[in-house]
Every structure is written in C-alpha cells, then in structure tokens.
Image (cartoon, rainbow, N blue to C red; front, side, top):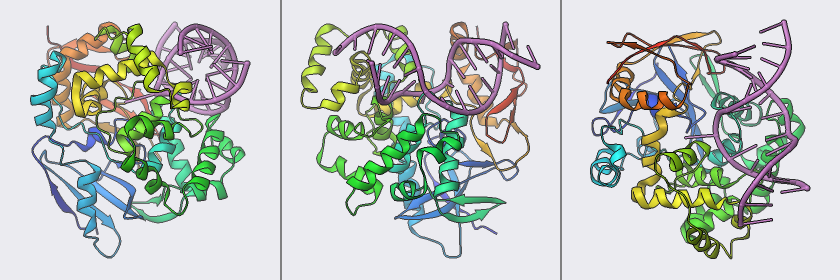
Amino acid sequence: MLSFRKLSFKRGELYLNKVLRCGQAFRWVFHEKLGEYSSTLRIDGHYKIVVLRQESDDFIEYATVGKIEDPAVPAFLRRYFRLEVDLAKLYMEQWLTQDHRFAGKNPNGVRILSQDPWETLVSYICSSNNNIARITKMCHALCTHFGNPVGHYDGVDHFSFPTSREITQKASEETLRKLGFGYRAKFIVATAQKMESDRLNMSDSDYLESWKDHLQYEQVREKIMSFNGVGPKVADCVCLSGLRMDDVVPVDVHIARIAQRDYKFSARKQDIEELQKEYKNLPITRKKVNYELDSARCMFKQKWGEFAGWAQGVLFAQEIGRTTGVSSEGTTLTQKTKLDFVVQVKEESASLKRRLSQTETVKVKQEDTIVKTEIEYSVTGRPKRRTTRNVEYVS
DNA sequence: GAATAACCTCTGGG
DNA sequence: ACCCAGAGGTTAT
C-alpha cells in the first residue's frame, strides 16, 4: 500500500489532467480505476516510480513505490511542476495587460514542466511529423526495450528512460525501425552516438544542462540543433521544457498559422536581416532555421515577455493534444470527464466556437447544457471513438 | 537563403 | 473494404 503525501500550491495553479496529458510529457500512464498517474522520474540521477493523483485544486498527492521514503521527492516535484512560478500573477500582470486575447481565458493549471533534458531531446525527436499517440508509444518502447526495469505498480512494469550509452549499446537503426520509429530511427541512433561521444564523463542531462550555464539561448539552441533530427522546433521544445528557458516559444505549423492569422505577425525584410546578422556565427542555426518562423518566435517573445513559452501553452494547450493519455489496462476503457474539464469547456465555449468556424476537427452539437463527454481510449492512448460533445453554446 | 519533395507509421473520415 | 490526408518537423536537393 502506497503512502501518499500532499504537495500544496495556490488554488488553480496546477491540474494534472492538463499538464500530464497535453502532449508535453509522453510517459505518464493514467490508471483509470485508481485515478492516478504513474511514471518513472530521474531524481538525483536515480529512477523512481512516482504516483500522482489530484482531487483538489490546491494540492496534489504523491507517492513513490519502494521501501524508503526519499525526502528529495517533494522538492523534485516542485521543480518538475515549476511551482515557484505564479501562473495567476503572470496572467494578470503580464499576459492580460499585453494581449487582449487572454481576456476571458484562464491559465487554469496549464504549466510548462521542467523535464529531464535528455529524455526531452529524444522524445521530441520522435515528435516530428507525428501524432501524440504514436510519440507516446515510441517513448514507452524506448524505455521497455533499452531502459532498465525500475519496478512495477498496479500491474504495470516501469522502466528508466535509456541513456545515450544504453541506446548506442542496445539499439540500432534496424531494431528501432522494427519498433515502428520509421525514419526517426537513424536520428535516435545518431543523436545517442553523438551524445555518448561528446558528453565526457557527465550524464546526458548534465551535459545538456551545462550549456545553459555559460551560453545564451541562441548558442544553446545552436548546440542542440547539432543533433541529427533536431530542427528549430524540437530544439526550442528542449530549451523550454527541458532547460527551463521560459521565454522560448516553439513555433510549429499550428502556432505559425495562428501567428499569421490572429496576430498578423509577418516578418519584415529588416527583421530577417537582423536575425541573419545575429546568426552569422551560428552555422547550424543558419542552415536549419526558417527566418519567417523564427521571426514569429521573436514577436511572441516580445509580446508575452519572459514567460512567453508559458503563455503559448496557456493559449493553445487546449487546441492540440487534449485527448491524450495512456491507460494502465490492456482493454479499451472509457474515461468520464472530470468536473474541472466540464467547467473548462464552459469557460472556453466562446473560443471553442471561434475555433469551430475555422476547423472541422471537433463536432459540437448545440445544446443549452453540458451533458457529458465520453472518450474511449485504446491501448495506445489514442481516443478510438468520441461521442458527440454537448457543449453550452454561448452566443 | 528559399522553396520542394520525401520520409515511417497509424488512423479517422470519405 | 479501400484510399488518403494529416499528424506539435527535419533533411536532402
């Protein structure tokens, strides 16, 4: 029997259902019956199984699987969830005042995590031209095949995320292709090999982390992009979610579209020339960057300030990857929505309505009350079938 | 430097 | 039952 302890925070600052399923972290397994998330986390260099649950809006509960209680765990989790960052304050004092599009929005517990840098790097290499369900599957495959067993909980075996050495020793492009990595197989192998040969005696993550100590963002990104399969988008994700560079806004196709359509961000010739000048000593950046998108990144940073990456998460986390997650059971499960999700839908209905006129991905039926949402999850975590949502429609 | 095609696999919708 | 676009991009040409 696990013994859970509380981790408290200001009301509304963290919702596990959002943060752990928004397509930022790919390795949390949701246990439907217990209402718990579990994963392995690298804490002070050692992997532990961590179990999390949340039934209240001002604390989560955590437990570790194992005999002794590690006093480092709460501090680690505070850092993992970046609980020192006051989301409500950022919203009120920075985002809302700088961007009217935040009006009526609510950060509502959407946070940027501080994830293990090496795991972040490899996970996001898997994300290229891919969907979240498969990325999740690939991350788990890496762990089960090339990581080490850490233990098991509620019938699920847990593994460490493989180090660069473990990947170079145990994996090959061929084995990874057989595991379904497709063309990313050679990226993973090449990245692991480069890391293994570059890192000296540091751990993979310490090595990545060390760049941050003495280099500016542009140079850190240059170094991260020196890995095969890592372009500007992936590098920025590593900066933001792996290295806590809070002002970095990763610009994917989706954000690029929004930048243009909603913000009318379009690079002037002068903007691009300035960037080109700035990157003159950064050959890899010059080769890989798209100046139009990079310019949009700069404009978002200017508009939203030192936590611009978080602002992007708050504004757009709901639009993509909402329905992700892995269940602990092999059979198909039904997930009933939690109350906070329903409330969230209510709050978002205005923007949801706006989105619907632009995309046809969600089907909404006009009703005067919210009934419920049911999502069926397959083993891979991808919703197999989604019933029609009944959403309060605000005119 | 900018534009284009190709790339693995899986899945929902025609 | 099939087919095909598209999915949190990157690389090669």
